[in-house]
Structures are given as C-alpha cells and as structure tokens.
Length: 414
Image (spheres, rainbow, N blue to C red):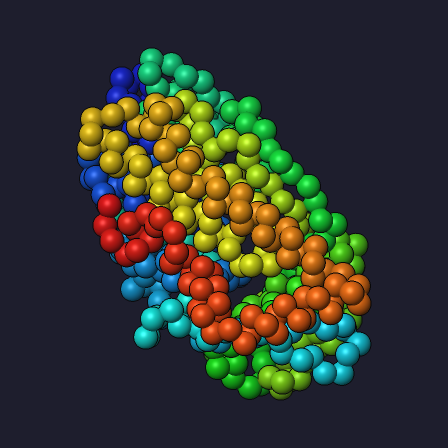
C-alpha cells in the first residue's frame, strides 16, 4: 500500500477521491496534469490487478476519446479500440423471420473521427492508472472510506485501515450504490425496471466492418457492439427472472437463445467470454454537491444502457469538475466551498437529468409488445431516417459534441 499522509502529519490533501475506476482515475489525472502542485489521492477497495481483469468493453464517444487524448492515454488505448463506423436500428418481435432496418447512422462526426469506439475496460483502467502514477497521484488500495466529517475548513476522512486523512474536498466516484453518497445524506430518485442486462463477448465467423446494431425486442434492447478480431460485445436486456435463468443455465441453452436474437448474418457465433447479468434501473442524485463533497459518475447518476451513455456521462462529470476546480485554484478560491462546487452542479445536473428521462422514455417505449406503440415508433424511426440533418444532429449529440462543452471534451487543455 502506498504511503499516505495522515491528519497527524499536519499536511492536508487538496482532493481525495473515493473510487478508483475510470471516473476516479481520469479525474485524478485531469487535476494533476492541469496543476502539478495540487495534492490528489485516490482510495479504492480493489487492487489494480483486479480491475484490469474486467473482460467487458465500453462505448467511448468522440468527446470522451478527445478528453482521454488530452489526458495522455488515448494513444495507448486506441490500438485496442474498435471504431464504430455505422449503426443500425431494428424493431421486431423475436419470432419475426425478417428484421427490417428502420434507422441507420453513419459513424463519423468528422473525416477520420468515428462518433464512438468500443474500448476494453481492462486496457482503459490500466492506461489511466499508469498515467496517474506517473503524475504522482497517491493510490491507496485496498482500502475504503468508512466515515467523514467537516473540520477546520476541510473534511476529515477515516479509512477502513484506520488511517485518517484531511482534504479540502472529497469526491465520491464509487458507483451507483455509492456508500459515500449515503454517508453524505444525499437522497436519490430511484426505481427499478424489472430488467437485467446480460453482458458477454461473442466471436463470429464474418467481419462486422465496424457496424453496431441495436435490435429493439419486446423484452428490451439487444445491442451488438463491434470489437477487434471478429468479436462483438453484447448488451442483452431481458426480464430479471429470465436473465438470471440464462446466466445460470447451461451453455447450450444460452447459445441457442443467443443465436435466436443475434441471427446468422455474421456466420457461426460462439461465446468468447464470461456472461454476467446486472439489474437495470434509474438512479439520480437529488443534489451533486455539499460543502466539501461532490458526486461524479454513477454515484451521481445511473441510467439504462439503452443509449450507451452511462460511462460517458461520468467522463463529462470529470471534465466539468476538473475545469471548475482548477479555475477556482487559479483564482485563489477554496475548492471545497459550496459556491465553487455549485458551478459544477449547475453545469452537469440538467444534462444528466435529461439523459435519465430520455433513456427511461426510450426503454418504456420500446420494451413492450404493443402493436399500437410499435406502429408509432416505427413511423417515427422511418421519418428520422429520411431527414439527414436530423440524423447529423443526433449523431453529434450522441458523440457529446453539442452544448456548452468543458475544454477537455473539446480536446483542449484546462
């Protein structure tokens, strides 16, 4: 475990981050890179080696890859990333012989710049951890925050190991079931969908040519997302009961049900990774900040994966929070003061609320077998497909290249 200053040393951290995943690591890197004098530490229960074993992959939008490039890690990640060059949307029942394509998107937001990439999670966390270490970020693992309270214009933090730290600001980046959020007394708006997302990797006989597919089926969306080496990542939504049966059942039954949904357009398919199911719901924090405390990533917002925006919302939080904190330091302001942190909340809260509503509505609209709703949504998808300017707007929106963007998301230094 890395040596860490304690409150007894009389030397206080500027920022302590609870959570060492992509959001926590990228925030630490963003702060340290912009201001090498800032004292940043990160605490997480997991060892780095455990996080690097994550077999999943994530969709990283263009704005997020620009940020990762500015943070000095994209060059290392990009050779392992698969660009999404095209996306198609279908709407059908499982028994339908033909799945008509109602909507297609070209995958570039600028010449040579795809609107998104699929990135292996293990490679992304390794690159961010290497960069954080090279910049002098203190990583405390395995350990966890068990309690904290305000003291002397700062926050005193007690770790599970018994260490006591002081910082000007504590940032919770510890996931959708955030313990730090609960300790801070921040309430959430929350409900469950009765669905689970099955995540796995498949290998297939034919190349996907960088095409992502979103098949809307009555039980929920079935997404096929391109990976390197004739592989694809699946996010397969089912009722929670059915998902548990499929994940716990035998390989033959799972592959049979998978083939019914995947189809034969990429030739023979076979499992190429473990399968897991994650319950799906909506969680929105009622506030993102308190004095000396801020939420980022899934700790602030957990949404349905129907739009593939969950991790990208977290990267947007990072870009906004880092910019607010660094600018406050340059002005000689207290980075843990509520008026500073409220600038971050105003910047991010509407976007996350809007995305939560959009994903909730889309899931309810498409995860059903109503003939009336099917007719309405298919007409709507068809109309959008015939309006190129609308499709260009949607693809730029999905790529995170609209609205008031933090500088990192535009590929600019803070």
